[in-house]
Image (cartoon, rainbow, N blue to C red; front, side):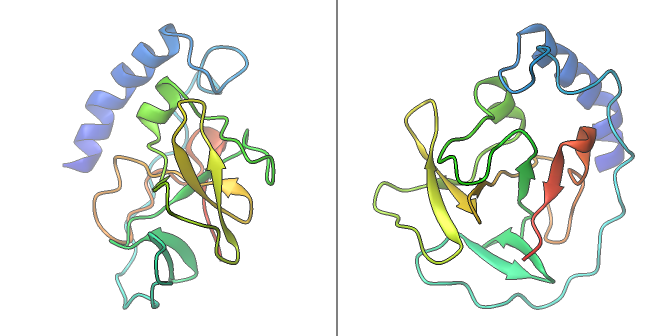
Length: 155
């Protein structure tokens, strides 16, 4: 079902976003004329590591994931330590940011960055983190290496 969804809807979504002048690629497109590599197969599910109190993220199987076990990603155009996200507008619709509450504070390698819309976003080692809507189950990594610009976050 997920591959059918990807094959049927993803080209249409990307085409619509590209024509609106997405804000995260210098050419106004999403990094290329193709749709990236085929989606990798889901990985086996195992027990999650403990969640750090107050954080919506944790480490599972060597990757940073949400509390629900959903994979998070970084974007190559984001500059580590800049305190800002480069993925705004249409990009943030396609790659939802992992948002931080106003009361959330940095903890260790987890920091909070500013977004253009005024919201706050979690970052890992200074790079903002995002989710990919195609990842519906713990262990899904369908966004990894998407357009060679989006990557899972290893611990």
